[in-house]
Amino acid sequence: MDALIALHKPRMGRTAAPASAARATDGTGPSACPAQRITPEQLVPAGSRVVVVAPHPDDEVLALGGTLARLARRGHAITVCAVTDGEGSHPQSAHWTPDALRHTRPHETEEALARLGIRAETIRLGLPDGGVPAHEKTLALRLPLRPDDTVFVPWRFDGHPDHEACARATLAACRTVGARCIEFPVWALVPDHAAHGRLRHRRLLRIVVPPDLLAAKAHATQAFASQVTADGATPPVLMPPALQAWSGREEWAMA
Image 1 (cartoon, helix red, strand yellow):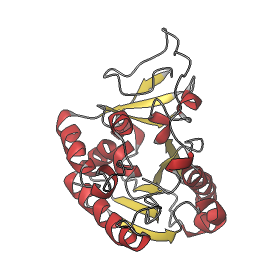
Image 2 (cartoon, one colour):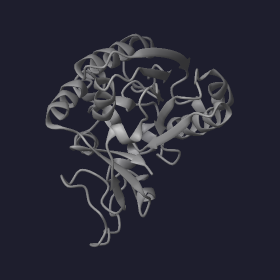
Image 3 (cartoon, rainbow, N blue to C red):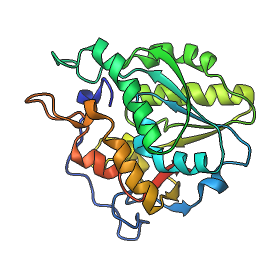
């Protein structure tokens, strides 16, 4: 999924969440966060273009694919700003070289979006995978935003430097043009990731994914073959606990 996963390994032995905390209904979502149920139609005004700022080619589908598909069905234009090409996901691989990943991963995203029924405009910004923080100001200037856009970006405390830099840049760009910005957790949703504890007591928005789109999202996830398939003796970049955290019938945004 990104160049720095090895630096952000899941941690074990977390303190148990309070029994009174709100819980996702299927057991895959945040377990210690107050959550308000909301529909995509309530989240995004009619006629608003939906812009997703994706640090790596899969973040938008894994964490928000069902929501984006529902918005596309409602007639919203979808624009994906692909910040990096995800070329750093396999730093030690002889097969998945940076050039191979730079070529393959955008095509995987295109296929995943198609499996969700999303015809998106994709803008590739070509910033270095793992190096977005050094280009944060440039990113804020390059995002092609309009005042009536609804912009989605990973949470500013998501536990990955690229995600967090994208959030800061996007928030700054939205303030400049007057667009609405909605943050969503990605790695913070994974129970054993170091960032998961940061969700504790944060207010979240809970978006239910209907069964047909849940199946489409599962099919779309498999389009990311470079990330979900082992590289010889090396395990996949995206391991089962992470995929399970993103596969539930609820998706999440920050309130």
